[in-house]
Amino acid sequence: MPPIKPAMGYVNVIQPDFHLHLKGGAVANWRREDDGEQVRFLAITEDGNEIGLAVSGARASFG
Image (cartoon, rainbow, N blue to C red; front, top):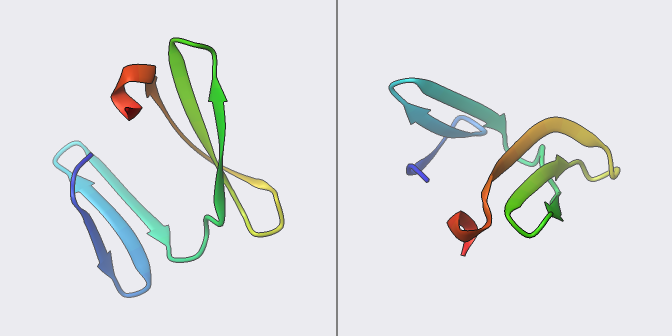
C-alpha cells in the first residue's frame, strides 16, 4: 500500500496511475468477505450502507 497523505479533510492515496481522494469520516467500518483465496473489504458508512469502494486481493496480501 502506498503512503496515505491526509490533506484538507481527505485521505489521499496517490500513485502515477491511480488517485484516491476519500473524504475523512466517509468510511466507518469495513466488511470483510473471504473465500479462502481472495479477500475483499467493502467500505461501510456509519449508517451501515456500502459506498461502492472495495479493496481486494490474494488472502496472503493482507497478512
